[in-house]
Length: 470
Image 1 (cartoon, rainbow, N blue to C red):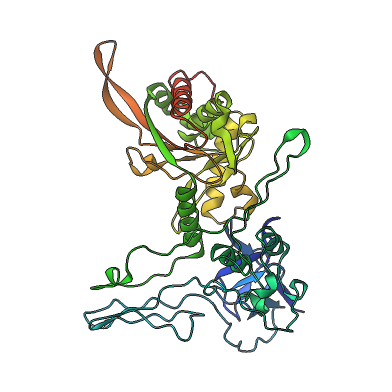
Image 2 (image 1 turned 90 degrees about the vertical axis):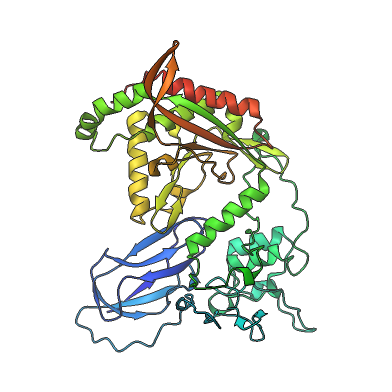
């Protein structure tokens, strides 16, 4: 008896996923709950366990392909079943990077779904490779419906999310060329249409949101277009000498789109402060072994900064907000996103309702999310709904950084390296453990005075720490 392996729904707002890697090959044995393949969604990368024990009989969706949820991506046969040699799975993965070029004509990587009449840019004695495109193909262009065709939106395969985005931006789904399985119009297709103007003028203004109960504004629709990743640098200035081409991973593309969009949307302003964390460093040094033995989790510096940030957000709630057009959404919860560096990118898991947790709860939450992020065990819901973010370049020795705001937040706190430095205290030189803190904030909402008062609250909390860690 065979068991179908399906593309799972990783969250309420997730309607499709991309198979990024198969961890088993057809004919190989697999145990129930053993990692079988990896997927990437709009929110998170994750390892998907096998639903049954047996032999991987067939791979139906190749690496790099994006398919709707509940699509059968593979088949597991009972152990002992003869497995026929599988036909090569159709894969939309980017082609292998070309070998490093030598002087002369560089090798041009094949580009999936590239237009047949695309002509590379010509240079004297040199041909450039075609412009890289995402693994799922070039953004769809609106097609002109021929007279009498009569294709209604109801006949076009698409998800509820796609149809909602199309409705909000006055786009006729029936006039989009879908790049999904079986011509399905995917989220990528509709976002590409929105960014390029759509089939019927997608630049129509978004209708104003009506206040909800008690004057509370509804959350943003999430229908904003992805940022363009086109380079402003002429291509002939990038392809020269010896080089190799590495297509961006799905996660890298999402990070790039999000960062470009954030810099375009939010006018970034930066404030820097210096904090004396000598007493906290002494407390951590004294308690870290006992803390780990008692609680089973490590005592790092991060929970101290999270707790101090919560105190700052309580005192200055404007920093804990989002912008929806001409409305400021003041969040009552402090959902703290913690940036986690991965070998393959960056992700920001979120500690929900951090203001309700004690020090130990925050420490456990941070360590748990970081470990599961590196093991690809996070759920999409765990990387959403942050109201404020913290990033820690100091882990890698950075003195301080100026981070980009993670939308839809209006601020992000950067932590520098904690170093012993000579400082003047009461007209005497002393050696103290010091750290630089930076705040990147959206000047549409947060003014410099509020930003520095917020930083002052964090500084006061850290330099006058009174909370027990156990």
